[in-house]
Image (cartoon, rainbow, N blue to C red; front, side, top):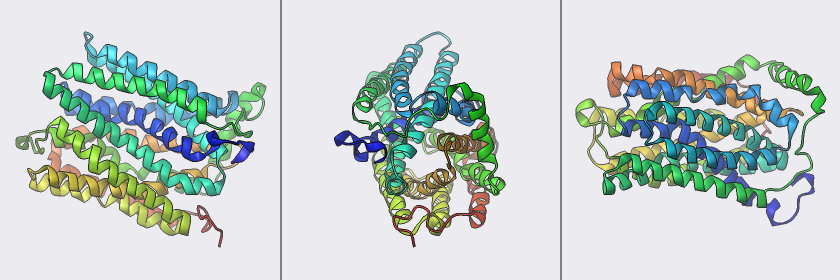
Length: 427
């Protein structure tokens, strides 16, 4: 460990999994769980896709305040306090479910949660870079990706399952969602206390530069990032890697919930939650661990193309589901298992690529800028996905999603990556 941290609290296993589970859960709650919530309460697909896609904006523009996180305080402090703020924010969301004009009110709270979550991402990713050596970063990248994605499946699966079961028993959808948001509120307050106790205090984790030179540091973080000779290729890859997923993720849940007559599969909310919360979590975890293992053995350059391909190929499973509309939950769960394993395995390469381009004394800001472009690549395609789906139908929509994955696959052949990067032992 850097910075001379000692004791049980300094061990990465005590905080890396919980840190990235805590990073993924508010993200999935804002961007995807909100889709299920509004779908359950009768909001149209076009409105769901448009307004929930706007919630990506805080992740798009977070590079604008990432230097403040880097220059004003230690990343550890930001992490702890923002997790407490997220706990209070989900409490506010709970109170807005039954309020008059709930759509506008809860959407406003989701916006507040999005800003808190995106700022937490900056601090958490920066802390990861400062608290671990490069070899440790490579060794734990699969684990952090797995727990980040496990949090997303927990939100998209476990919490949806809870909402569905509670609604089936009580007949009160709004009451069920109030309990779900209450669970999230309590979880983040507890997570805040846990990380205040166990996270290490590396000496390198502190304000970068003098506060009086804030503007100079702010501008320098952007200048140094965009001065890369291959910046055009880097931005193209960041923007296109999730082009297909950005559209699919907004419409997969409506597809599973819509009746067969509308081209959907007619599953219940509880069935959707069960499929994602069981086989989805297991497949994702295995895929993430496998991705981290192969990169640490052979390096990012060797694996980035097949791992990018692995992320996108499972989209064909949804083409199959839309074409044949199978009635059994087992078939749907199998498709989700394939999709989640491929995503967990392949997305590890994308995370490691973001780590690679975060260089120099402003690595926290560089990482935030990279994830900002990633979020832009999610927001813009997602905004129109509902409109596209309602005009093409689910089958042709998922065919279109598969076509949208081609640009990122092509770009991987041209990326400049050190063959030794990510390997535990240099060649």
